[in-house]
Length: 285
Image 1: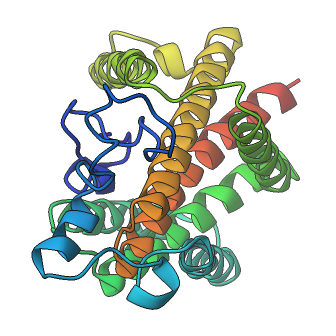
Image 2: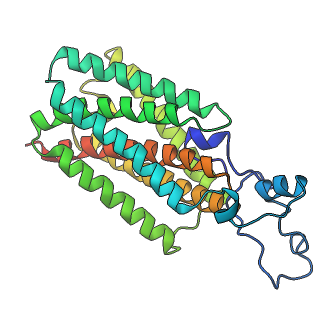
Image 3: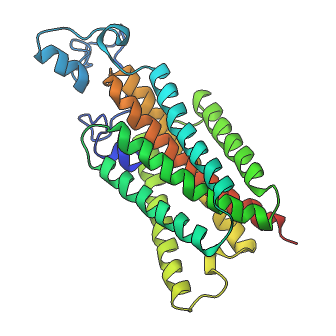
């Protein structure tokens, strides 16, 4: 599968059908017509690597494969770095034009670091944590700005982000959403269309064609766009969950837990920023 996150676009667990992550591991008892029944490692790139080296695939615990504990630990480190950066920025950077400039600069640096990591074939923890730190500075400044106008908005946005993430995980684990190739294609088409529309809207606002932010105004239309953006964030989370699940099932190397953490952090930042705007819209008189 090619995930929604750039970090997964080059390191997807690709398989014969072009989308990895949507087929479960072969189980015993399949019909004789199943081409994978005789070779359960046929579509597993990590197992194939082991076989080429003359050793059969082994359990993750003994071969340095990625586990859920690895993903949780790296995600905690990455999100913790974002939180520390945000808290320090909030505490040390009072609201001013200089702070806004630092926030924009931090966002640009975070974007550059994210793109560098996205085009690397292996995860670089320093790049990922650097991205998290600069992203945290950006979030800290804009959160303080929103809080100055709508008291408590950042706290409500954090709660909203946690609620969306928990609900998405619950729905995913319950099997109410099946992450299939068709699901991914439709969702990504909608996401690309959304980004393009937002880019056009930004240009119209910049050249004075659209007033008050256009589609991103602090009104009913802006609220609707915010809800769509949050739903897209939840869609990205389902792709991330599936990618992580398949990475563990198919024996991804342990260091790819950093990529999983990176992707989750990017998605959660997306949801938080959109939730912050939505809270502000509903907090207006």
